[in-house]
Amino acid sequence: MPSVTKSSAIVLHLTRQGDSGAVLHVIDSVGGRKGIYVRGFGKGRGTSVSAFHNLAVLDIVTYATPKSSLLYLREYTPVFSLDNIRTDIRKGRLGF
Image (spheres, one colour):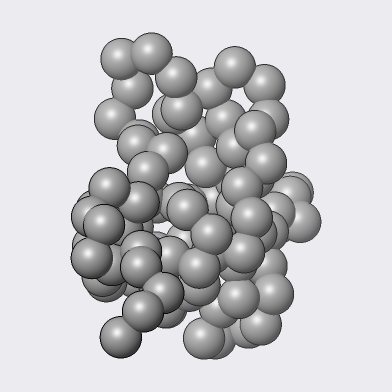
């Protein structure tokens, strides 16, 4: 029986795995550093890569199966919107 866990996480790294999957490396508020398998990357799929940039803060729901050492991502919600940091010149400047 899968166990479901809710927590907050900070994204460390995203590694593509095959055509439509990825392994998300996070620091979790419940259990420390974890690897989470994310299904559904690719053309016409619902998962966006932009939510998983480095140091993004997410509220996640994961589930674990007894057959696998990786967790699986069921739901995610970005806590902060970091979409316009790269395009907004006021946020990227070094001066005061």
